[in-house]
Length: 383
Image (cartoon, rainbow, N blue to C red):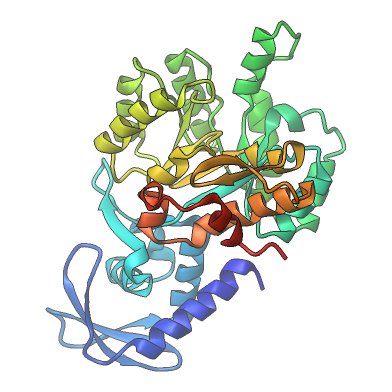
């Protein structure tokens, strides 16, 4: 049984034990529903207008809970596979997840249920099996891998390890367009990434993929749009990537309102100053407070100051390289007595814990708490 199935069983049992006859809750669309009765097999619900209750299978409810733990965001339509009364189910799921979930309306008017917390995708692991095993041992659940790095693995050894360590269905694929541009700027010869080869790779390996980023074209939003549409036509709708820059807001408006995706990836911040990033993120979350954003390459203090939906970075590996720790106070030097393995384990354990840390004060306002570094080290037991 997988990690999310176990969590779903525990969550559903805990919820049902507290559920009482006569309890009312609001559906996704805001109508009142009442709990009529609960059995071993089903929850019976009556709407304000109906005379007889309708049935929501507890098995299907557990499946819906598992789906939410896995995807962390879903529209009302996506919940139809679990219950015909999808609005009632959405409201019930919000009750199940209590204060860690919210329902919002997308740009196209769809109701979307999303969970709090931040999902961290461990990256930089295309060739390092040892680091991948450390991440796995200390709680990593999801990975981000780059096609730019994987395309030279002709024997698909990466996929063997993905299956062996239980990451099938938990790999987010990045095109590697940024890596191509970086190599070109350094004067190195590098083969460009074509849409055809990227699409073919996704089709071949989608059985282990959680999702995939669009093949973005640096400094060319129109070409990036065309790539998105081309992948969409192939039935491979990607996560759109927005290049974060002062003259890019019109393009983000297009992505949010015309594409209306589940998640928008934010790129092009790696070489920005922290001050500039903060200015851009202030505007970003002020304009689109309910949009789930994934921060590409994000691991700085700002990760804890804004309600990002997810993030990825290779910085966690710096625990081994430089004995630095990723904390809400920034990247700090580890205590002198710590060895490289302890630093790497700390980063893996800390970043993987962010998904289940639902306290908004932790992610958004923790900098105000001024936690001393020596206490920060003690917050997360390593072994």
